[in-house]
Length: 294
Image (cartoon, rainbow, N blue to C red):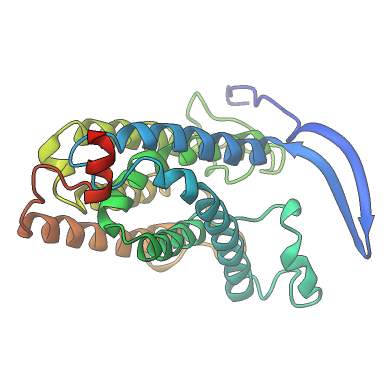
């Protein structure tokens, strides 16, 4: 038998308070590691982004993110869940949702899609910026810098849940996952946590240190899209194909195809940002400048 690393079996439920019944639903009252990953990511991201917003050109006041945290949470949950359900309806012949449409609401049973959550946050940011008359790309640049925090903790939660594992392999660090059959597999969740999470976070924060980059609204947003798309496409070479979908043209995966428009749009944002004139020395709204002078 090939040598493998032992998979650390951790109960996906961090704290269990039992269940309650609501009609036909049996609702578990528990705190799962996956939910904790979302909570920690949102709160830590909020703390970091407020600090980042204080640096020039100060186009978005830090307190704006105090209000946006609710919008972001709704965008993540609704977008992530809708994306997952749509994927199931398209590729899994409806999964359990055709027979039981109410199961679409049972978010506690799991099922979130990153691309759906990303779209949900983008829509929330667009509406929030229109409502508050804030520069959209300056706002998303700040969000882009902290989004990898969520990817890092989210992929670690995937690893704890033993889901989204990699392809069968004979590498020395392979693991046998509880639901992955007897074959040792790549711990691809950790690859994604390291690349889409930690590495991308470092890249974006290093770029953010340059005031010239911060003044070109869209560069950081574009860098995030390119970085995520490239890292995701790379890790997909080690990650198992989505069940029910399998491999596509020339052995590619849905994750790799979803990465293509992200990279292309990211390139567009960077090219557009470089072609635009930089904002003035202090792009903070006049109201914010007056408050700062008091």
